[in-house]
Each structure stands twice: as C-alpha cells, then as structure tokens.
Length: 362
Image (tube, rainbow, N blue to C red; front, side, top):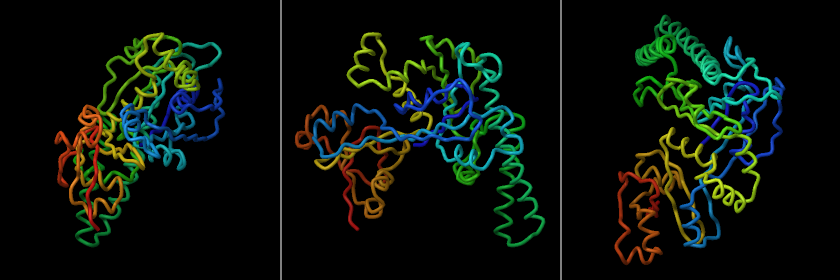
C-alpha cells in the first residue's frame, strides 16, 4: 500500500509524515520551494501478528507494509498547464492520497493564504487535483478524436469510440460535479483508466492537524464536505510526532495515563485500509509468521498468488482457520483436534484475519 501525503506549503505535512513513519525530517516554518519527495516504509501495527508470533515463535515475523511519500507542497496554481512530470508521476503511483490540512493557529508559522481556514485549504488542493485531471482528460479526448478522423482498423476504431465516450463523461463530471471518485464507474472502465494518473479518482483521507487542541470539533469546519471514498480525521500532529520517537513501553504508559485508545498512526492506517477496501490474512509456521494484504472479497486463489505465483498456478486447496478460532484453541494441533480447520477451494472468499496454508502442485 502506497500513500502520498499532499497539502499546501506549510500545512504541517512533514510533521504528520514524521508521526506516521517515526521519522526525523526537519520541519520548517517556511517552504523551500523545491520539489522534494521523502519516502518511508513502515510496519502496519497488528496485535494479531504479535499474538501469532508469540504462539509459533518463528525465526522471522513480518508485518504488512505501508509506504508513505511526503510530497512538496501543492501551492495554488501549481496545476496550471498540467502538473510537472515528476510531481504527477509521484502522486499518481500512490494507491490513496492523504491530504494534510492545518487547523490551528501559530504566529511562528505563517500560513501561505494568510489565515487558517480548513475548508478553503481543502478546496484549493481539490481544485488543483481537478484541474490536473481535466487537462489529462482534455488531451486524451483530442488524441482520440484525431485518431478517429483517420479511420483505420474497425476493432481499434470501436475501442477508441468506447474510450472517447468515457472520457467525455469524465470531462462533464469534472466540469459540473467534482472529483471522479464520486462517479459510478464499471470495473472495466476503472481498468481502462488505470494508467492515466487521474488524481481525483483516488481514495482520499483528509487529516486535520489540530495542533495542541485535543478535539474533533475541527471536522465541523469542513461543513457538508462529503464525497465518496473520502474520510476525515483529526490528529494532534506535534504530539503524535513526539510519541513516535518514544520507546513502545513509554508510549503505552502515556496512552494509559491520558486515556487515549490508540496512536494516530494506527487510526490513519485503519482508515486507509477501509478506504482502499483491503484487509489482512496470515501465514504461520516455525520459519515465519507473516501478514499479507488483499482486497476485501478476494478469492483464495488470489491470496495464494499474493504469497507466490506458483501457489496460484498449482492451487489445489486452502487449509483455513479463523484467527479467533486459533487463539481460542491455543495451538494449531489443538485446533485440528477440535475440527476447526477446513479445506476450501479456489473461489473461497478470504475473510479478514484468516490463516491460510495453501496446498499446491506445479
């Protein structure tokens, strides 16, 4: 899972990046104006992996991973004429966007728009993403219309006509409605659009950095801002960044003392999983306990392919047990004795937390 962190200059993106990745990037009150991207790969916190590792005592424990990319600030007007190649490529390669919005006053950190206004800032960045998509769609329409005027192979012409009709729908939606993630698009249409770098098609998580204000009231400042595949969350950026640098035992003590259920990092990842429609299954054994990520609703053969292509190619059966059943039994042999393991075929829909052992032959 790759998530691009975007926002206006001085929106505290890097603070949130450090909080999510336990990083130490310098945060500045002024934007450098230079296009920079900082990336970090972090483990997805999952207490189920911890318990499975304690049960099997493997030589290796592997958590699911998420890659965060902190991208240089998107200043107003950056999309005029189209986003630059490096910037567009970096954002378009992500699975989702995390838009950091500053929602606190700080006289030492000037706001690029002169004042703190969360809704205005969201709309500015939305506008830049919309303009980028509109330019891409318009250019594609021009090319398709030019190709159709030349005639040519009937099959190619038919495919171009289908794509042109889709692009015209996208243009109308962008012009009159807004983000493409609000559109009703068929699976085949989504596949057709996969390589165009359309940014408003991506799931969006808006993170309001509320500073030292431990309240979710900031969400109300966005009024009736509602779109599909969009989630809004509040984080105390500086506090989360400081907690990210502490040893786990000190973090647990702090959370307990102040009655905080979980770190913001955990919430952001959970929201991201929900937005992307993904979840985890596990493989276990003496060699390794590992978490794998697949789309919700994926069949067992697809899960096998995530582990290794040979497992999908030679798939015979999947031996499956639910995480809760295994924990309740206390061990895999005990679960077998209770008849909790079952054999499933290729079309079995893998559930969140399933533990799989793939039987295959190639």
